[in-house]
Length: 127
Figure 1 (cartoon, rainbow, N blue to C red):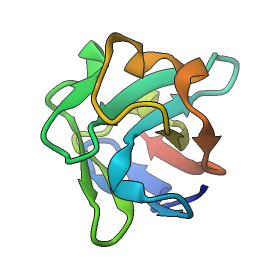
Figure 2: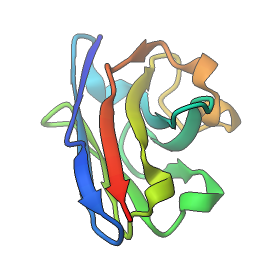
Figure 3: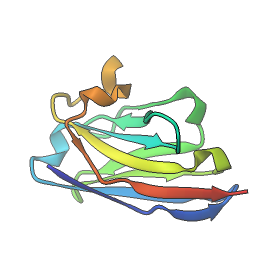
């Protein structure tokens, strides 16, 4: 599985961005996809995850209501819509694939459970 993240950039506080992650290789529509982020000097943290069919999703509590994860299995792509961005959202955002699960689990927020990672896309939010 290869993952290619895109859509990052520089945005002013209060703005929006949509990240995309295109997958190739093993059948995309069979596994959980997740987004994580890492800010300078901090550990990688969970952002959101989505089930194989897009019908269920999980978010870190602090981002609920501002970020939305979705997927288009016909396009082998997962998205992260980010609204009302804040300077503290500045980070490198990574998409990841958990090939062992098709449904969200309690471990979907654990980076160790993901098998493949994209290269990351930088989001910078200016104040």
